[in-house]
Image (cartoon, rainbow, N blue to C red; front, side, top):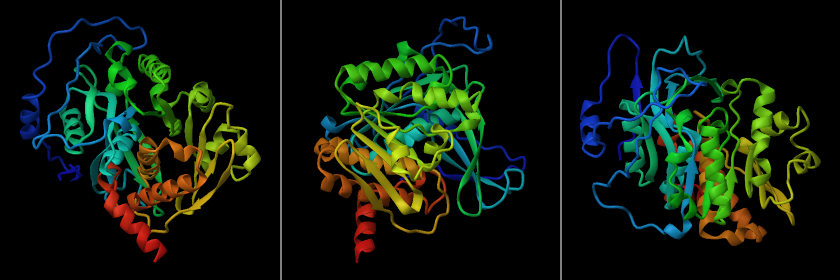
Length: 389
């Protein structure tokens, strides 16, 4: 399976994917004319028009998957550029490996890799990278009926610095990028309403029109009885200020049924309180929440419900790149939850599902890039067997 993870060396050599674009143009015809809508918050040179996305047909026919356990992931899909050598600044890096990314898209692909049923809703540019990302979803059997293409804005890019310990620092190119321009009238509401789980982050809340689209999509899911899953995925450089990030993330907090947060995000949201104190974590537990998950990297995770709480140990591995580890964890738990909602009330089942999710996250940090590193169910189960052997 091709994963389009290519090393880029910026030495004046141009790269091209005309063959890939030609094959995709047979599926996506040349963009039709559209009316440019006035929008004061965006530069007038950037047209905002509706390009109705279509699902990419599979060359070998779609894999049989249980649509009753569908997880729909909403938000951004972009290109991550990761240095080929860890521990260097972006300026010092001799080359970058390009890899598809974006937290909601990572989760969608992660679920599909694990044998689950998933779909992605979001917007990319009508450009080479946008076509590449559409092809990635197709290759990974992710439903892309809700994907849209913008002819006036580029697909988002993120350059990711890897420190020597594998942790990351980000530099984004979005002003604005296509994912920020998804409009409410472009939503595939039918796809959203038939989901078992609707998963999203907070980056889609930063600017309009995507913020309104996000809120409308979540409302449609909630009204249809779909389980809402929220991973804030804090990226401070994308928000106007720390306070606006805190307010934005918490603005939709009480509507979620499941929330996954990291230790750092607890400290941020509680303005510096101890993320290891259960009383602090419980402050973030709203009355209608079914499950609150706290990831702790290699240490595993903590879980909190109305009736029980605990910790599940992680699998220790040598970290190369932590990009996508949290998304792999989310894919792991949602793939289990979508097929058996009863684990929310059964602590034994929940702990087994979280062991599975921890293994998904651990395996992902062993390779560079997010989507290329996401494991299959077989690989995860083998890792779990080795960990208890």
